[in-house]
Structures are given as C-alpha cells and as structure tokens.
Image 1: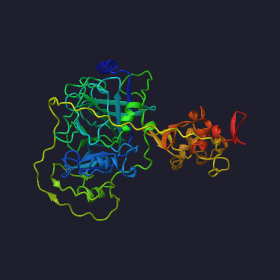
Image 2: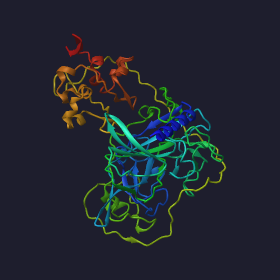
Image 3: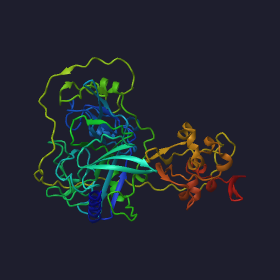
Image 4: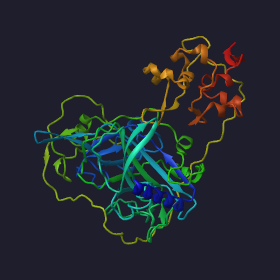
Length: 526
C-alpha cells in the first residue's frame, strides 16, 4: 500500500510541475461504435487489414474512404455527437474468450462507449493548430515517449472501476494493455496520441513517424527536434460496461494498444475552438480541467447513427463473420476480399436479413502490417504553417417581442412539459442529454424531482411543478446554433429576448410565462 501511495504522490508532484494552468479540454461522448470491420482506411484502400477494428464516427468504414467522404457525412450516418466533427477513430476490436472442451470462442464486445478528449495549451510554443485536411495518424502505446507524462505517468492506462456510494473505486494498470480477470462495473481503456508534428499529413510511409510525443510526455511539454509544430492531443477513452471479467483479447492479440485517427473536421471549426475557447480555472492545474468548448461552439447531432449491422458490413465491405468466431480473422490482404465500394458519400446500409453471397477466399499477399518505430524517427524539415481560416461568429439577432405566453398545455391545462433536451447522469455517472420521452419510458425516473420539474405532465405533478423553472441544464437554438444554458441564464438579462427562444417559456415558466405568479411562496398559474 505504501508503495502505491508513493507512486501516486510522485505522479501528482510531476503533474504540478508540468502543467501551466492553461489547459483546455474538449470532451466528445460517443454512445456507441459506428461499426466493426477488418478494414483500415489509413493502411490500405483496397485490402482487408490484418485484424478487425472498432470504429467511432462516420459509418464510412470502407477502406476506400477519403477526407472528403468523412466531412460530407450526414449526421444520421455517423455516431458523432457534433455535426462539424466527422473524424474517424478506431482501435483493435475487443473480444471476450470462452472455452468449451478445448474449443475457444471469441465473442466481440458490443457494449462499448467512447470519449475522444481533445487537449491543448495555448500558453506554450509552438502554438496549437488544427488538424489539416487529409491528416491521419496511427499511434502505439510502446512508441518512444508514450510511457511518460500523460494522466497517470504514462499516456496509456487501463482502469477497472466499481461504483461505491456513488463514487468510483478503480484499480489501474499503466503503460500496457492488461485485461483484468475480475468483473467490475466498467473497464476504462485510455490512450493519448502524440502532439508534436513535422508538417506531413501521414498519407505516405508508416503513418506514425510524422508525429512525436513531447519530451516529457505532457501536453505543454517541449517538442523534440524536427517537430516544430503542435496539434491538439487526442486521447481516446473506451469504456466497456458492464465488464464481465474472465479472459479478453484484442483482435491483433497484442498487449501493445494502438489507435488510428483520420481527420474529418469541417474547415476552420477546430481552429476557431482552439483560438477562442476560454480556459476554465477552477483551482486545478492538472490534466483534467472541466470539459469545455463543445456545447458552445458545435452543433449537436440530433440523429446519430447506431452500429452498422454485420449483414451490411458483409454485403458492402468485407464478407466475413467478426461477431462470434472460433479463430480471429487475421492477415493483411488475406482470407477475404474487400468488396468494391458502391457508394460515394451516403452509405447504403439498411440492416436487413436478405441472403449474403458466400465469401470468396483471397490468396495470401505479402503486405505487412505496420509496426511501431523502435527509435526516434529522423528529423524532417519543417513545412511552413498555413493557419486554417477561423469561422466567424454570427451576429446576435435582436428581438423586440414581449415575453411569450406558453403554447396550449400538453395534457393538462396550464401545464406543459419542456420540449428541450436536458442534461442528466446515466447509470455510469456520465453526463448525457435526454428528453421527456426518455423519462416516460421508465416511470421511476419521475421520482427524481429535477426530472419531474422538467416534465411535469409526464410525471403527473402539475399541481406541484407547473410554474417551477427546470433546475436542469438544457439545449436551445440561438441564432441558428444549439447551445446549452439554464434558467438562471434566462433570468439574468435580456429576459424578453431569451424567453422568446423556442421552448424556453415552457422550461422556465416562472420567468417567462405571464400566467405564473407566486402565492404563499409557491409558483402557481393564475
């Protein structure tokens, strides 16, 4: 126990010395993968990859996928939470292994969530710039510089966590991919990619050596010689919930983890965020400042995709089983042919049960799988920086209208559910956005007074909460952009204008609805 305390104190001391207090963190929560397939659009556009990958973002997971394909993806064809970011992230698929009379069965893990965290620090040089069009990279947990700095004394860690009295209690492994045998409420696997850049796009060569970790492994650290430009750090956090314990393995059967990233940001959007998202100084100058930026600068994807069905993967991408198998499909350009891409941008996936043609075996081909570099790559001459254009902020719309009287009540006279989506915590303690239909699906949710206040008709509490403002943070549309606010913001200033935004009157009736009054300390309809 004492040795663990010493290690943690050492990490805390190192973080105190290596963080400037100017870190910005943007959190993007993906509720599910977009697909699983034995493809890798970075490595080969024509062949099956060495092993199966799990993708997050656009459903364009065919190997013949380009930057233009990604940025033009429709929201309904992507699991991204925000429309402006159609980047594609992927990692080796995770399988649970069971044995019966000496025969192994590999069952693909499906209960996955992912959170790409973006971090940058504008107080250090070189200044952080956005990923350019066409940029891609692969990072491995054992490449030079990955084993220092980061969140836990390294840029790769695994945690097995249980909720005890609403608090997380976790065991951690740093540096290597180790799946614990014990079960826990969730397994978290996090890997942060390098940030120092030599100016190349990563299209040619090994797709690795154009990037390097800082000299101390921290986001604000100095970049090594030959890497005189800086990009945001992308830390991919993957969560398995619940984690059943037992034997697990990745599709490449390695304890070295890797993540692939293919830029799909709309031009100028990420640079605008980097330049203008403020630092939140809450007294902590560490690796995890509060999440910021996304809600203020980006447009919510209101209709994100689910997982591409295995039938569609087999019909349109690679015709092989990857969900439950007795041996893992392995081998670059081996076993199965990649099916020629039959669409431009919008995938034709329909998730039906029509028959799938029998797979055609592919002869062995000598294409090797890239391996992480074992030494620092030779310095590459820097390329002059071309900053991305900064998106302009729309001018505010001025309204002269008076406070809005709420629309006819939904189900009960003088009482309405809020039509706006609200933020709450799911069973894993993660912040999620929901609406009153979600509350209605599980009536016990009305036992939460905050949810009942937001959805009084659904919860049958109009007598108590008809004129009470929602205590929850909600999303509204302002000047064509979806932003997150609360009723405190509505009542601070420009009340007439703010009450005029769609759904705000129903959400903040004591502020906005002229039928509400206070009687004996209770808000009521007159």
